[in-house]
Length: 284
Image (tube, rainbow, N blue to C red; front, side, top):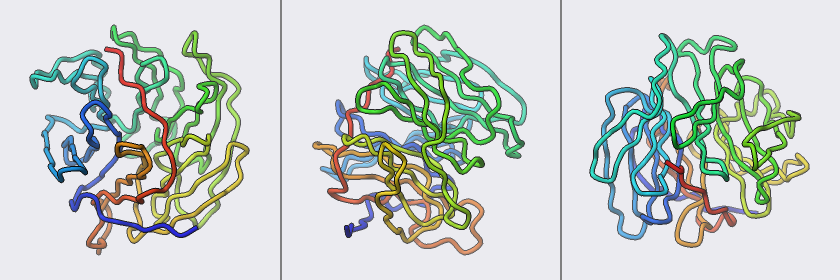
């Protein structure tokens, strides 16, 4: 299968991450983690907006009542529709920052962290509810990245990048707990490192490859189904968007590249790549 690769947003993000489609607003949300910026993009009009944060921001997700929830270096904050920023949970750990995050079917936010020096086991994966209750799910993570759920909500997929694996857990929608961690697939040496992910309506898992110049699709049984080559090496995350959720948006990074490609740090799009799943909003 051949895909067209288009430019959605020309940018020079240091570390573009976390594309998320907001169906209520009809726009794409994404962040530049190291640039301390939250971006929005409306593909229907081409309109773009940027908000600067005071610290590194790992992810920004829509809230059920409007506004955004932010995974920040020092914890989780709520950005109200009027622009007011409120701390929901503060957890400042020297040498550690926020990374990718995702909203579960029950409306909780699953937040990832990592050490700036990427020390082994220095990060976490936590579950944050709307009242600010935080539960540590994994406490021996190195670079917490992609998290997503199967169409029926019974499975959770997760990536700790240096493991090179896409792991799968059994997810209990009633308690919000996960169990039975096992590998779904492993990215082979020389193909890049697994970063962000999204799950499509067929239950297949799309994975962005850092230093792999590609995005891959794995079937629910772990079989590599598709590989789409991209013009930039550091592909960080992917998400379906557009009014019918058929366009796959991809964030990229230019940090650490001595001679970055002109599109490094931009948002790319694969029109008509598949069919995505509606993403829940944070219940808080």
